[in-house]
Amino acid sequence: QVQLVESGGGSVQAGGSLRLSCAASGYTDSTYYMGWFRQVPGKEREGVAAIVTFYTVTARIYYADSVKGRFTVSRDNGKNANYLQMINVSPEDSAMYYCAYSVRPARPLSPADYDVWGQGTQVTVSS
Image (cartoon, rainbow, N blue to C red; front, side, top):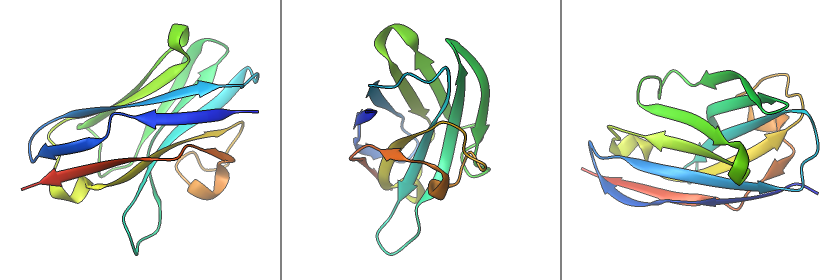
């Protein structure tokens, strides 16, 4: 049973940076996707980034257009974790951030294609 736990959220000023972590356990698939999503109240959850792992190698990375050049997703095999490094953040990046797991999503940045979710970590960016 896959379990995900996010951490690293908090408050930051516009232009600052933050790194979110997602600790994963219980997965056995050789190929899997770890996605990062965010949601603000009253809006749909949106995909931010996704990282594809083939055995222990990063096979591919996806980013939403809104975060390209500012957010970087990475992984650490030894810690069974993946990270979302956020730089030059703006108030529009304020949201609850979730990591999620899927074996083979048809759409890597679509929340509907992910099966397992963490509890989320809040990011608040002040202007």
